[in-house]
Length: 536
Image 1 (tube, rainbow, N blue to C red):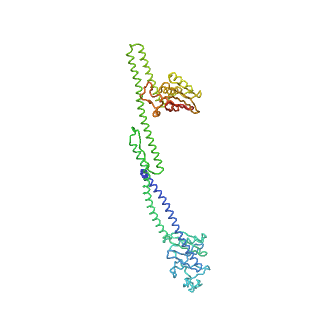
Image 2 (spheres, helix red, strand yellow):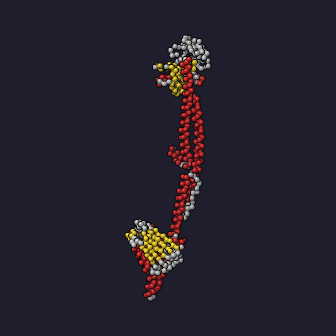
Image 3 (tube, rainbow, N blue to C red):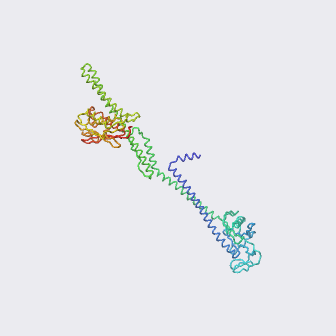
């Protein structure tokens, strides 16, 4: 059953669970406050009753010491008794229980004088006291003869608690004592004892019915008040908590809405959680949730762009491969039909056939290299070793002068040697691509320069030409695969559009960077390779 209740509690909504938890906490607080209040109030009322008894007994002791009489408080259900306390115990005065009324209706209680003489109750004198023979004067004195006085005491039927209190006072050696006792047939009483004279103890008992009744009313009022407050707290708290937790429900609804959509073919996720208050914690969660959605949105956009680029890449690659393949098939047919022709014509067709096959082989090699660089396979296409970048630049410059004599080339190398741990063949390929790009896209006679410099951290190569420049809108995509500044440019002169893409991928594989700045008359490609890092 307990497990069932626990499962039912866990199945409640968070706002309800928090409200119930708040109610339990409030119930504990109310219980502590109520216990403290009732305990304090009972002690306070008990102290008040004790003070009242002390004042009454003080007056009675004073009367006993001055006039040898004590008057009780029967009208208030108080009990008053006088005990002679000896080693054998407490002996009640007037054990017969005879009670004589005074003129004001209170019982008149006598005590034995210090000399041990017994005085009897006589007529009332002018001061309201009784002499022993009826001749007492206004000074309140008592005569020395007359019948023995029956010591009158106002005691309950079972006075054992009063006697025990009188005995405990003598045993404690104190002047007075106060305790709570259950008197048989009467109820709970507060009993106080004080010494009138040596071995004579006055005991008073006051009922605690009014205190118990007052405490009962107080407990009832507290219980009703706390119950109303608890119910109000739970209801209002649940409403406030539900309002405070509303942003979480909105986020959950947004998440469910996202999961109900098929994101397989989606290229954007424009859903966001609107700001709606809730405090700093809720705003922080909302910000994190929206950041996650923005990240998913960005990932979908990147995926869509990647898929689009892949489709474009496949289309461009197919187109680029189709061109030399068509040429190969055409020249093969021409070679077949021209087999009976002159040898010079056959050699010309065969040379063109080999040229197109070589062009297709270079294109396939570039595509394979890009694919392996993108995959970052363990079998990387790079073979790093110690090489001199300055020497690689000089070799590339010599090859450029031999292949493009129509473009004057200037080489500046500082320092004279620049050792790096790189793949020399791939770095040389980058240099050849950049120089070839300058020659292909600039008119004859355009100056080209190569400059090598170094910092403690980086080796820098700059390839500059004084051609017409690259339009700003094309500079951002100049390193994309199959991208051409002029799409209509002849492929034999303009290339396949993979040269700069290969250069960018190779430099990135060496943990370096390549960038372009261009304006009419000054286009510069800047390559930076870290001197202390190893290629991927």
